[in-house]
Structure formats: structure tokens, C-alpha cells
Length: 200
Image 1 (cartoon, rainbow, N blue to C red):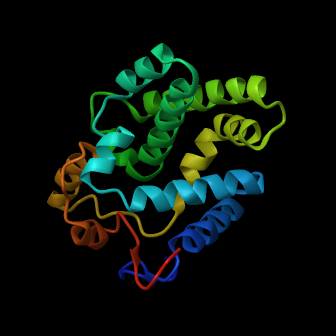
Image 2: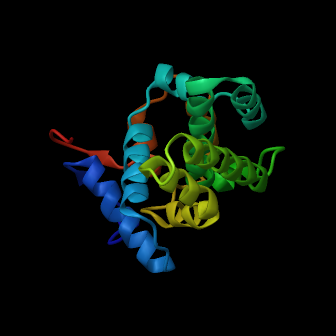
């Protein structure tokens, strides 16, 4: 998406597309991460680009970060791991792609970044206990320590959304609340990349 600011780019493989965009953004920032972390982020972006209303609600876009944090802290076992992961992922994605929108809300983007770092940090600690030195221990620890840099990399990926369009805030708010949103409208505003064919 870096060769044009005014067109929608069709891609055949979203996972490969996001992996390449991540590598490019990381190189521009001089950011290095493990291959496992890059793969995790590419899958995160692919998954979020395909969210419909029901899945968006399940992920937690419609809930305040404080509520997601409370759920994570009060959960046990695997449910705690999933709640922290969901909170970290939603915070990272929101801060990276919708930071300007968050800046116009009562809660600052800095709060969401702090919550996201905390969520991934707790996951790193949990996975260090469960599987010392394992892949998820490495991934979540790296996401916690490099959270702000990854947010910056997400912000550099592709065409920035046209935030001056009056539809932008409305569509974004509805999508984050888990309401049905016209995907073509999100594509038009540059929020999501277009795709074609049988992407994996």
C-alpha cells in the first residue's frame, strides 16, 4: 500500500500481505522482533480484518478497556490467559490503527497503551511459569516490552484512514461496538485492505 495513497489495493493472501507490511514497517523503524512475534502479529491483523459484528463483540471491541482488564484479573486458568490476550490484542490494534480516534475520546491513547502493555506483560509472566522459554513466553514478553514501537509500526502500515470524512468516526464506533458495518465503506476509508481470490 506504500506506492499509492489514493487507491485500494487488492491482495490474494492477507496473511502474506500483513507479514510483508509488518516487515517493511519494522525496517523503517529499525525495530526487530522474533519471527514468532511477527507471525503472531500477522495472524492478529488477518483475524481482525475479517471481523463481523458477532465476532467483534466476542473479541471485546465494544467493551471499555477497564472492563476487559477487570475480567482478566478476575478470571482463572485458561480463561485468564484468553482474557489478557484479548485485551492486549484489542489495545494494540486500536492504538495502532485508531489512535487519532482514541485521542478524541475521554480516555487517552496512553491509557490504552498502558493497559495493553500490562496485559501482554502478565501473559509473559504466566507463560514463563507454564512453559519457560516457550514460544508464547517469548511472544508475549516481546509484545509487552515493544508495545509502543509496534503501535508506531501499525500506524505506518498502509494508507492512513481519511479521518476527515464524517463517516469515519461513526463507522469506527459502530464497528468497535460490534454492530454490523458495511465492509466496503471501511475499505473506502482505508481502514481495511481489500482482498480477492482464495487467500489463506
